[in-house]
Length: 285
View (cartoon, rainbow, N blue to C red):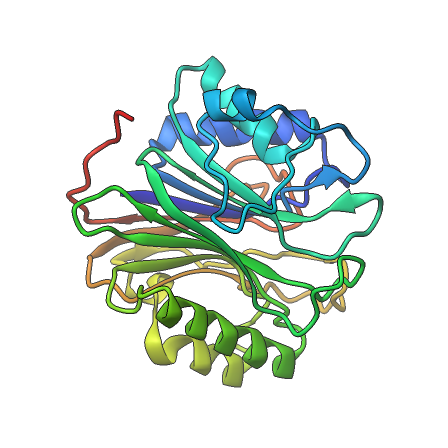
């Protein structure tokens, strides 16, 4: 199974049509099975997409039922692009971030396997839509034999105390949903630099394995190179994006993409792509 995570920073500094095309090309080229997106945005005041159209595109609404997909929603547009090249992905989206720049900031999951038991849960201390520190996590179960669970995450790692609060809430959510003993992958932007914020990184690795560290083959893993909004431009590359797991599957490789060297740069973050051993079956539903 191949998994990709990307903080796409959509509808802001980059051409979103180009972003979508490059992601589709990457999915086709690398045969990606699971995709997690952060900052998969939509305009606050765009009109909503009809439920029957979303269903035809493989959309799975979170059990909490509070997602409204707008016409310029990045995940919706990506689902249409995938459909055009005859790729049948199931997907889900929910608002995660506070509202800013006239946008609703969201997280999304895409999978070649069926998505079941989809949940979106608040993990931050604030649920006010206008607060940029608001964070929600999107979780879903795959239809493989092991009933693997994947989660799209975007943490407030730049604030260590808030990160610990969010992490604790996520662990409680996982336990409350009865997922603790399932193979689980957390994919996203943790906003934690393993070389600097050692406390937060250690917390992450107490219950989960960093697939970058366990991969048989890997590059430097750096997902941010140069200036990034909200962070000082130290000129030092940072590894802020991770795929963590509690599973024992062998990780064949971990590498970055969309960094301007290995593929075009389409966001202020590079993507992380891993391959893990897996016996999953595809979904026909």
